[in-house]
Image 1: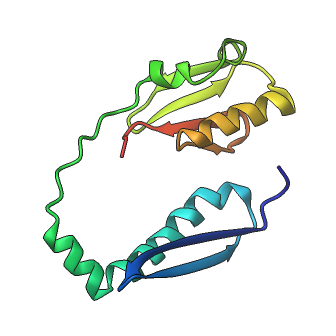
Image 2: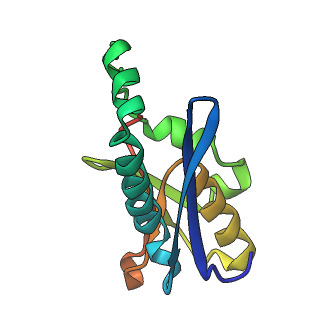
Length: 141
């Protein structure tokens, strides 16, 4: 994948049989900021949608059930990786995240594959020199 230059979030709802959509676009200078930018844009669009009278009425008629918030375990995260990558990584449990640290230099292909798996699991990469690591939030939504 090439360098990400733009992030676009599109969401909508149906109003009187017509689909209403909101789209927000942001320029992203640093790929490390992608996750935060996505969350921020989704929050903006969600705010617009939730301010619509039709949407508020629909929410009031449906009683939400409390969500069960299970936590992701180190073992669950470890199972997401093929064995050849597991051997290159150390998996650790922290308060809010499952932390994944490289045992050795990963190389471009291994790094890209690990980053893809981590992103699919809702995680990100923390660039901090020798302390750089991947992390996946423990809380499931």
